[in-house]
Image (cartoon, rainbow, N blue to C red; front, side):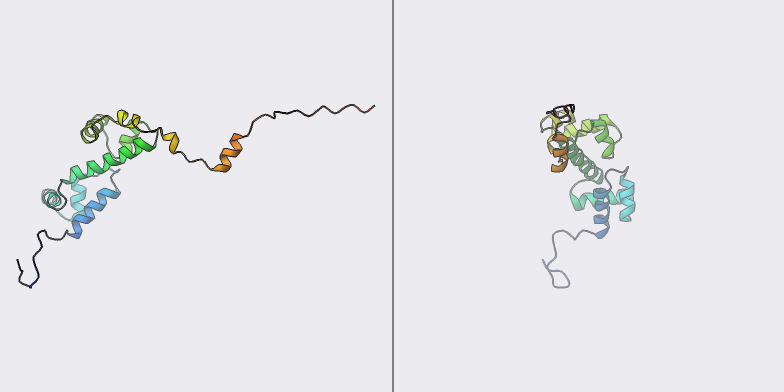
Length: 153
């Protein structure tokens, strides 16, 4: 199929810079209380038109995309830290632990606590410099004693 300019028409139009700007905002600021209205404002669209265009361009609605980013980050924190589930929920920008758990189970097939239990403890990922290990690995008390000084006669 040829277009008026002589070039072949592509099956899908190129993504607008405005939609990529909104997607980048969601990726960079997922932990903040972002809403679809905030993303639409960044793209310069009304909320309804933005949702329609975002879904057409990326294959999922903006709210689902943002929730997916948050849950992916939560899963990484569950694997690599010992933060509580409530702290992780808040750290990724979600306010309700119940909604977080329900969404997490839908995406990963198990609760956040069960997910964490399937991985090695976070302490295995803690990198302690060699010099610190050496200082704290030394005995705190001497294991040898010097002979007391003999009195001079």
